[in-house]
Length: 484
Image (cartoon, rainbow, N blue to C red):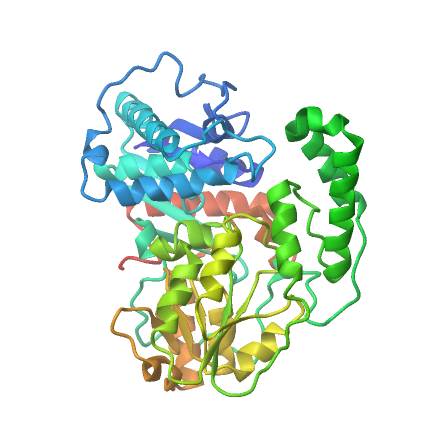
């Protein structure tokens, strides 16, 4: 088979080198980092940096190769998804930004990139695509969309929270879709236990005194002034005003929350200033309420798996329609969130919903889950945490756990009691989880999850994972998720 592979990390590149040794696998095109055929970041940043085989756009002319996608009934929805994915590189979200400004710019680039990508798939005679994560970065989104409309099979793999286990699917919409029948070995789950969410390390669930500008925050401010501040960086009054504003924000947020450790922009400053206004809000866990923790954006879990509900305010608006009299929706912002998709109008939408209360950053998410009639999320792990406690979960997107007992998928005719009144046996959850784990594959395809594997041995893991991938590509192994 002639394979196109999207691999942008050193560990997946190492796995790919072992995959190339399979006699019937030829990697015809690799989109990834500096050593790849096509440099992925050049497509999202829209610069001219070349990979080993040049730039996708070099000498490219319109060919019509993507007409199947452009003329498909769902193209407007998929173009909107592409714009959402690529918006993470907009100037207000990234120092190394692309030059797109208007919706027409995004539309034009979608057409150009789709045509160039489809022509390359055709000229390279690609007959299978392999993605080492669910497409969500713009260039991989278009690659997936054109491959699907051209009838080229796709295999998508993504890491799970279960140590040394990853899952697979042929379509993004299949994430979480699997028949979890009887007969599998139960996966032991201590009721009320919490999964190991290592990526949330350092996040506290208690009130704490305010902080001060950190060295990281100061560095990000300097980076902003150099890259985007232009002549304003030479204005001492302007810089002093930014520093005073930053200090005020740091002092109103708990000191574990470093709002500008990774990025600074004036929009981000306004967002955190607004967010700090919720820090003195009361946390009332009495009565009937739904706990809705907002998910981090931009992330694959919302951008690709959320569908229309990547707009989290839309999910909360729809949820509010099924609440009985007196019930509330308690909303908590993600403790790692920046200003992306959190402009003033987002918060205005939430304020317009009478039964919504926005919580302070220090509110205890575990106590909120335990006292809720149910939790709601797009795809977030809060749902997985909830069912482990015996609390129902409502999901709006393609959550990996959506077919487990205790989980309800959103539908337009849903009623309050369909979720709040849900009961299930904990042993049934363990059996279903065991069936799901049984459908996963051994290996690590995301380097960040290597820490979950005790004594992780890359020299043994990488070739073994490549063998699993080869089996998936040949159809010798069944994918984890195979249905909507």
